[in-house]
Length: 501
Image (cartoon, rainbow, N blue to C red; front, side):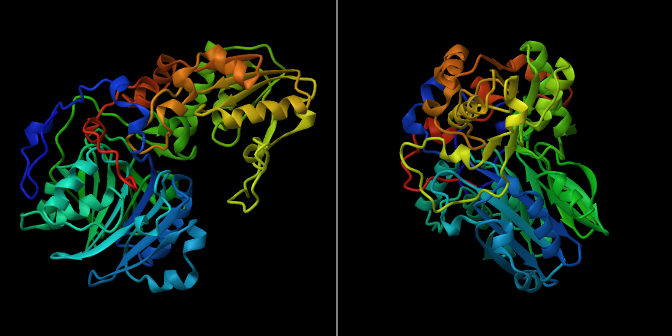
């Protein structure tokens, strides 16, 4: 693994190529190292679009599934001056009509954020907006930097002062402290310091810069709207403003966008193995999106069809744990010929509640979120398809509810392999010790859930189902981490408030 560069200097691009971590997952994934953040975010930006803040508001609405903790919009007026509104809560809670009217300009950058550790701090809400020598600078970032604390320590030693615990703030300091003369060179310099996952939009004045890390962990797409340009985490955010999809922004690509003009800048150095995150297709992306050339819905149906081939069961009906497993369950039904039913309904109006369940009611969270349709399951042999299984607590409750509703047999099927390793590249995963698949056999999990049979999609079957769009990062299933885990390997885990996007 290469040594960290001296800050403020340009890094030789050739020195990055082919860098891989030599640490073994079993050596670095102890419970003491699980304090690092795993966060999910969504970014959206427009340039050359009238009422850019309103378009960004709608784009963030479509990306709400990528983050429910905070939301923010920065708008840039004709002079490149920034105005920003951000706060904790859902998009609809953070912005009023008056807020959007006050955010003037034809360029805007937006962000939705969800974090698991140290995350409810309002100062971590994005976009990050600062004033620096080249004008107002704004950053919105999706992903996790795996060398953020290493860089942060070096920056603090050089006199930098941080206001938040987000790893994205590291980028601000790297840009501002670069010794290069132009904005493009300063951004280029900053990006070469970063390891891990970053799909990022940066505005300087009313010019946008969009970049994706060399492995392409997180999706970022480019679109066109009314003579202007749009950048978003997923195509569903283009659809909501009736923007035309142009293409995916490729791993390592850096673009300069202003009005209708697209200018490619110097790309980040290529790596031997690009690594888009397969868990985006399994669970995280919206099924109506297309990312990396793949329809998320069709990918999940392919997972379901392969799952049916690998783990058939004699049953009367098959249904999903809604909503993220709907497509996989349809694929399972199509392949198996077992009738598809709506056996579980999800309450879409569940938010935070002030009601605190008793210690004895361990089913409370699932009870307010899901309910079986008794007429579908009573006396029936049912196949329940879920997209993934992490801790298993919700699944245990669901099986209990189905038994209470009269299900004769319950066969549980998971449209992905066992999750055995935490993700350090921007998907929320608990510690390795909390991952059911890391410490229990399939039969042990079946016994814990109380099901008649249990079946996971194989890793080979999952990857084969989407091989035309790969290769993919499958670290949460395999432990094969594609980018060096610098902070983990160097023991930077003692933060009171961990980093994250």
